[in-house]
Image 1 (spheres, rainbow, N blue to C red):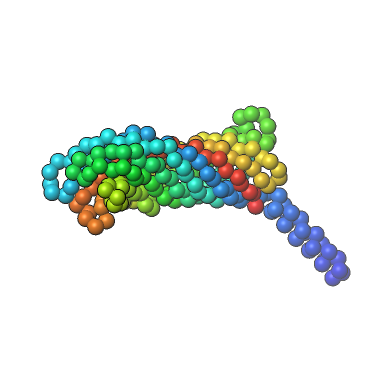
Image 2 (cartoon, helix red, strand yellow):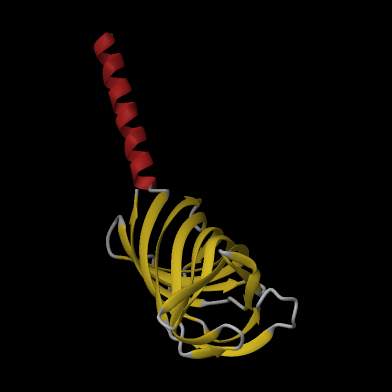
Length: 218
């Protein structure tokens, strides 16, 4: 009798573990990408109370890197957390009241949470297109200028919305590749100089990020 009970228990446990493993509700993805920002108007305030100066600046396409962890709830719906670093190189710009910058960048580190839904748009179970939206806490956003060989930084944090779309391809039972677009939607942000909070830069920040990643279900 004990042998039968042990056998039934073993079979039940094995079946439960197999079912849990085959579900593979969780997944993780590592991403690299191209970050696009374009032209921005930088408004500089020198802290003396005089009106800020407006300066046109251009940013080069640069890179993004990060990772995501998510969980499926059913076949199509999932929640996903992400950590993403984005940066864009600054082209030469003369900032009135601050100086002539010959180098620099505009960068951010964000922690996000998104809700996504998958679609079988191509009629194949291996391909899944998806769309989603979420919120991103930008833990640090900073703009750096190199002026006369010295780096001058302005920084802050912010909260932004994010829209996503992309496609996944299953290369096997557990591994997949992911290509996606992320659009970060933020109002103008005001960045302060760490050693003098009265000196500020106000600029728009809404980068478009194109990513390619490799993921694993578990």
